Length: 137
Image (cartoon, rainbow, N blue to C red; front, top):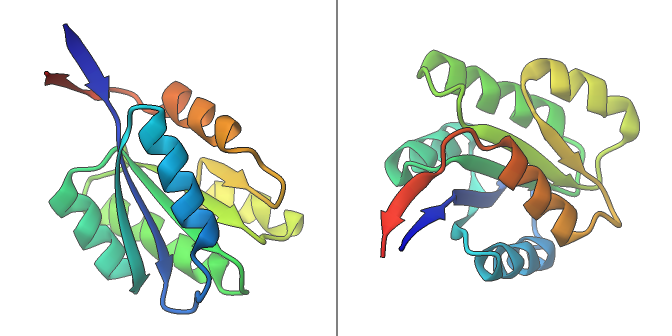
């Protein structure tokens, strides 16, 4: 039987130090049947390069320090420049609600703050990814 696999790249930028949330979410996404690649301490261009190389459906960025707006702006800009707008971009962590609207205008589709459940992220990804690849297994 064929199984639909969603590939997710989770990471933090150079400004982030804590990775407990990313690792927890990665475990939950894997338990939900998704393939997960974790990267750490990269610039937005390196995140995009990894996303293209890994052929992911989702880029998830963890942010617990100010700096999420320029990172979101650059990642979504790079996706447009590389004709990869079909890659779902989500952010999680400590993001002030005042920044939600600007981030969504940039192209971030999901923002998950403190207290968001892994189940809500999983459900959002499953409903938002357009064409998960099929893995004959």
